[in-house]
Image (cartoon, rainbow, N blue to C red; front, side):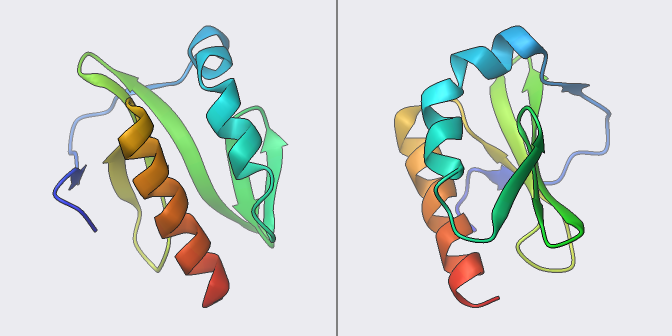
Length: 96
C-alpha cells in the first residue's frame, strides 16, 4: 500500500450520511467495480464479507479496505487518494 495507509488503534467515527454524500462521485465509481456490492450507503461487500467502509477523522475522510486478511486504513480525501484507492480495489478484485 502507499505511504498514505496506516493502522489506527483509536476508534474513529463511521462516516455520516452528509460526509458520504460529499463522496458520492467516488461512490458511483466504486459501484462499477465488478464483485463489489454496496449493502448500505458507503459500505461495500465482496461476496459475504465486508470489504470497504468509510470513517471521518479530523484529518479528513478515510477508508477501511480489506484487500487481504487484514483491514487497512487509507486516506480518501483528495481525488488522487481516491484514484489510488480505486486502483488498489480494482487490482484486488482482479486477483480475487
